Length: 486
Image 1 (spheres, rainbow, N blue to C red):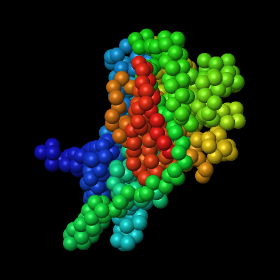
Image 2: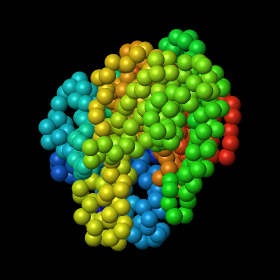
Image 3: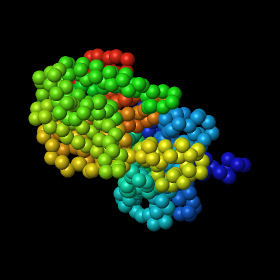
Image 4: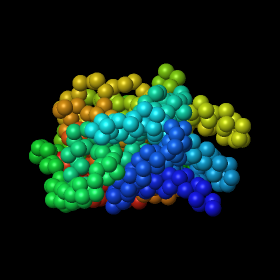
């Protein structure tokens, strides 16, 4: 009796779970079409616009909760100075569940609009309106989430793209051409278009459509890699430095010595560009930039580009800044991180009062002050020499426009600096989704993305949508040095 009475709600929950699971591994991509077909069927068969809104919101929420289940890889958050237990579980839940509700709200609103104004449209119009509503639902969910997480280090944005269904298709050669034209949004459009076709077209037409799509998926080759053979040798880094806490820390001297050895190995490896992971702070051990150039020239007489980043205090603000040292003209370039992590690099206003109520005083002070960054100066319009790659910081990869903002037409590649020091276990589900995001951006911008990482894998994302693990050339206790030719 309970199942019959709540069948639509159960069906909506299953639909959301299918959509969410389609995003957490490349092999699960068919689930995105199944989940979308179920979603359209539930919304179309809702009795009222209010009911369509309710089920749409349920579907959207469960889709996001699955795609964001990697949040729990941060537990226990000992970098906050709290003991594992109920308070930490509550803190993760108070971010995970509201994230699902706010990001999923966009689908509820879109379902209401469809049922209220669009369900009587002719079939040709539906084939345009419904996919547009689907994309609008994902975009509006991201905007609502950014409103919810507004704080001292944020702004109104549609950047948080977890849960956007187009990412499920980037592993398929056919849809990589779609990504080149319109990125994740156009791929999401085709998700909705395919699902709507299953519901509206006649059975024989559907079978023909599925057969054609299957042939295309199997036989359409991936886009060609548009890289010119410049022969640039790039050194990528993997480090394993834990965040400094009471239970896990690396003495400053050991960290400094490890980076000193690492960079020396990289400089004698005949690499043209050396990319250190996010917040490596290697050049912070020097007094000024002249000492950095002197250090490099004491080891090699080749022209080298070294990319480092660190926390910087400037005019009462804390920013994360990348420094690019170019020895060909002894010039240093700077990039500031623009898109920050809610709850990690700043505390949204909605949570600051809650933390003050729930947490001990020392924790409250640490969370609200010590971990707060702010976006630095926007430097996306700086004219750089052709040999200088723009920098994409860790979390900036989740916005569909991250590489677009950083890239220039003449950029040889994009340097992606990453640190996943907050995680207590390897967040494989997160890495699968970040791979999809970066592959999509490499396709859309037709530029390779080269990733150096702390507590995450070093990797290359090519403009044809493929990925590559580079060749290891040296390693020690805290680091591994890789090299790739671009």
